[in-house]
Amino acid sequence: MNSRIPRLLFVFMLSGCVFFSQWAFAQAPAAEQPAKPAAEQAAAPTPPAEQKATLPSPADKDLAFLLGKWDTKIKIAPNALLGNKEELKGAGKAEYKVFGKVIEGILTSDTDSGQYEDREFIWHDDNTKAYNIIRISPEGYASNRKMTKSGEHFVVEYSGTKMMDGKKPLNFTVRAKFKIISDTEVKYSSEVKIGNADFVPFVQLKMQRVSK
Image (cartoon, rainbow, N blue to C red; front, side, top):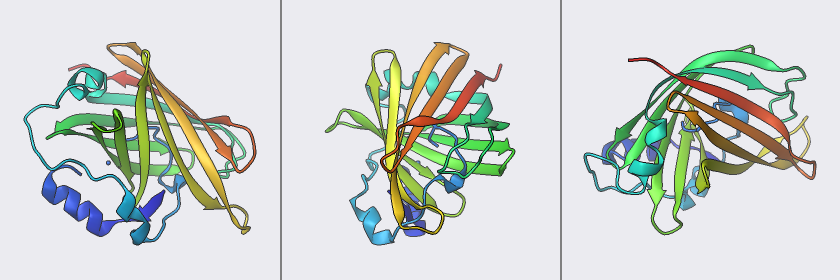
């Protein structure tokens, strides 16, 4: 679900637990999800307020692969959600760092459809044993996502609604997967389902770690 959340973002920044990211993010254009009334955001999970110097287990073990600076290559398949009829290509950068008990990601991209910059905040939910992700666009729109570990992969899922060709809103679901290739390379791939249609390819991201 999306919402315009300037007040919520302000609270996150004050508490130090404000979310990329994505990927991760998939680092899709910021317009991938529409805004919804702020009241609907009230049900969104709230990052823990307690601050620590390092991430608690299991986040310190699970998400260590994501920390650092990355160069990214992006491909966005033709899809009805973004409205592109041809494959879009581009490049960008990503940086993930520890922020209290949260991982903060800054994601930038430059594709055939324009330039984008998003922020992600990722933290572990002890109750669900999953990771909560909030991705925020510069316009203040946010999407809430869930990430779970499945074997050696991390699976990201989120849903929303979008007006399609001026018609009534259609539901969509995105599911994605992080695949760790090596210490210096990570791949992210996603697919999208709109309404009752089947899942189709969506965003592919190749992340190459920047040498120190």
